[in-house]
Length: 412
Image (tube, rainbow, N blue to C red; front, side):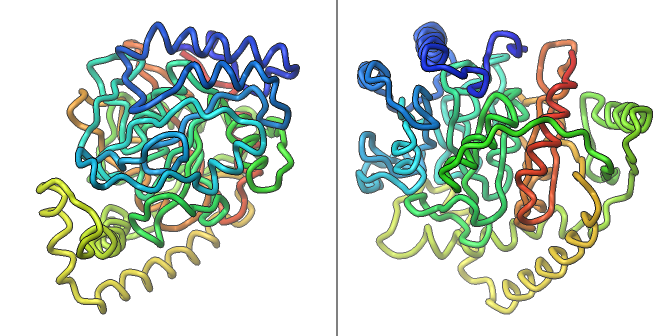
């Protein structure tokens, strides 16, 4: 792991410290980008010039990257597509414009899988180049993990922030639905799309989110949770790399530390846990991406989405009603609970050609509450394993405080 070598932005409390951090990041980029391949476009010279201006603001001195599904004025937006005719407008999305006004320096655009679906891009995992960084925010997660950036913006419609953050060993935050505006971000599934954030630590992730939403960056303190729930996954969703044993050990450790830590069975039907988000997402995505004259897709993606154009609207409406009922059930579940704890993925990053299974995130994304992953463990091979924390809608700050407490407990 690179925990000791990568400093979170909140630790750089002076302009000099921020300048030194940015210099180390650009040096790391020079050394490793040829292997990691996190970017589709970048401008190092422009970044140096902006950093030399000693830009003020809460994000002054911060190098950031943006997933290639987010519109930017300085760089092309190709949505991970090989077809240049799909290029989007050269304007800044809301999140980019706000980050710039807060002092951030946009280093470049990071690799995205084709329209955020599972076809892998060229990015490799910084811990093992033979393995995937995850998808679809591949380059954003890898760029932070490799030490190139303090922050990267991605998206999550299924598991595209939490899973790659877990595979790459960084913090990923999917805020509550609507907290970060998605104007200027290519729509995939309008009721599942979220903007996501990658950072070294939970306090960094919340620092960026709070700055963008409130224009007042907050540095959260680690807060020991009083009560947490562990959700045991059914046997039909197998976990690898000792995840089950690690969770049992973590529960016992928390109980010994005075935390009320209870384990429960998955309180939702397995079929919907595995498939509800996909049912909603694919119905919506087909109507966005297959609209006549809109986008040119590779044949595999067209074949995946095509059948959903013929799916009856009553089935879509029924799926949304079920989601609404599950949202109410989850709100009851998290009452009086500081965090719900589940694995961030089914195991460590698989070999490169596979972006991994999003099953540990899909359902929670559809419920719209905040989610964060913390790089809590690593295997004997040095591969990260993440703990995922879930909270009730709007409980983003409290979840970040709990996540920072777990972050301080990370171990080899």
